[in-house]
Length: 417
Image (tube, rainbow, N blue to C red; front, top):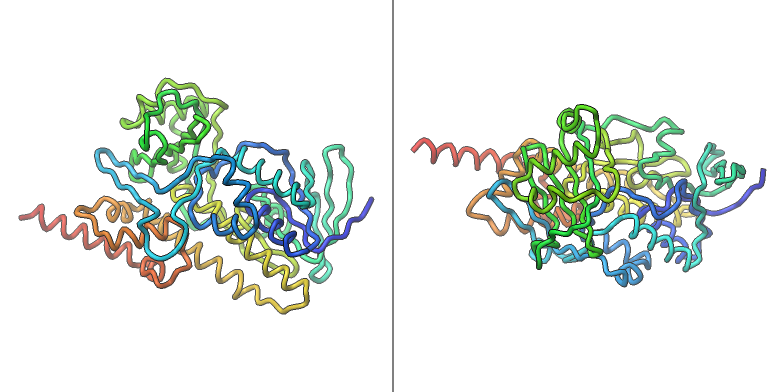
């Protein structure tokens, strides 16, 4: 068995691994990326939020991605019957990017890896991790290529950006049940032949069918649109008696008064894919010689498109800390990595949980709108969940709940007059 030596080995070439490896490569660190699949490949996570632009820019990937002409996402619309709530990222609290992209992930991730290879990042596709062992902080990872050949890669630090593959959580017994209730999703793409002109045809939208059930609509610049249904697993399973994903998604679209005409008779480009009980968590975000990033650590829910944001945030931070550590600096991984990431995850977890309780929806649709409240919530939805000057970040654990309670009391008082 041959042996290869690198400073940092990264498992996974999605956004987290791409940002981490590109940053390290730019700093002169000898980095290698192994990816089990071959790109392009279809994956969920097609709606980004503005915070990710900071990471793509710092990693040196933004310019190439910007040339690809992906649909610009300047905000998001939430539909509930006749009620409409639109967030504009340019009208948010604090600093930060005012826009991002809506992306077919197959094309987006492929372009990222092409740019990585052009820059000289060592990347191997169709290379599966078989085992990982540690001696102190140094790791030995055995991988198998598409021809079945084995080799070992010795590294000073290991970053697991394997996404839903969750390589280290599986191999090191780090998986932990999510604190969120079990939800599932089914999605596909359609050729958007009935797309309206102007903003109506390009704006990302979430159509709330029930408090815990919603349809996503993500238009792309190539003329296709991603359509998906999300809800409690029991509800999603009930959309088709035979668990046929095509029938289930067709039935879900029939439930949408807003989108039935646009998508009701349009065929799917590929067999709809199902994600069952997708929320995930881990016991630890790091250990001696390794860090977990992106979906290999925590995945919450697609409702606010936080997945890629946490992937790139954790990928960039893990890369910076790993670089310091291999250069001999002492890194406090608990404070500088785990505590930091857990804070942002806790904020978004609150928003996801309060979305499904209905409390956050009370704030979204309350009339008349409170511009100050909306700006601060918009900043959270843009991914700036570490800005503690924003009370909707600093007091996330009780502010939404308390405000929703006051709105309900006010409504009940008016009804009783």
